[in-house]
Length: 220
Length: 92
Image (cartoon, rainbow over all chains, first blue to last red; front, side, top):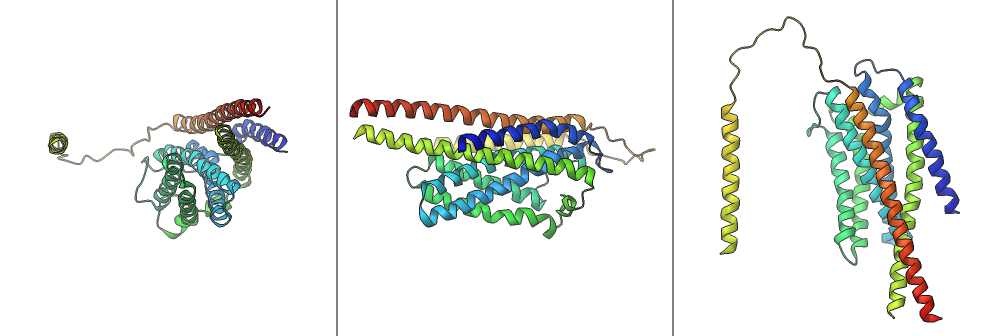
């Protein structure tokens, strides 16, 4: 089943990514920021996918702490790794946009930027724990994944709660149709691509577990 | 003894860096007057390289991750096939 789903998701996502630059190019310039605002069409979907992945990791971590099923642990690990991958895209494209729009690469006083960076660091810590934590690190990292997920609402709502130079969440809701269409297109492409990557990453962990079991059987 | 020597070296390097930073600050010439502009200064930072860099980074990161993932899966599945065949040979 997965041998059909993953190539299908990847093919649709690849076609959508191939079409995305044309749609983004056709979208109108924003009135105050001009061309640089077009970074928005990849920056925000990458950030949203990163937050989605944090939820996947957090929920899978809860399930692992509750039932101790390896599948939940594999999903949590895949989710954490993809938070870091999509998060780094958001964290790099954001400053490139900010340099032109705000005149600075980064603003530590900005709640959205700082909390996003802290969340990303938590998932980097998750991966380091898995890499170097040794036996039993699955349980500790599940707790870390849970804390990472708990930060997601703060990341999302920070622009509405605190005074910040980052645009608020209302921007997305108020997009005119000619800007909303390429934006939604990019979000769907990112989410489909993400779904395929999660499935592949879980499969890698499943195969690693099977390899460990095979080595153990060989040594008996 | 070795710890003390390392500590002394760390403190010496820190002091050296502090002196360099202080000299750099003192070497800056302070502004002595404000000159009014005739026109508003023009924005000189072009947007195109920033947009290009953002999209290029996103593509490289995603393609790089997919490539790394594919290599890892290939390696693990080959190793798994080898171990399983060794196991089958031993049992058979």
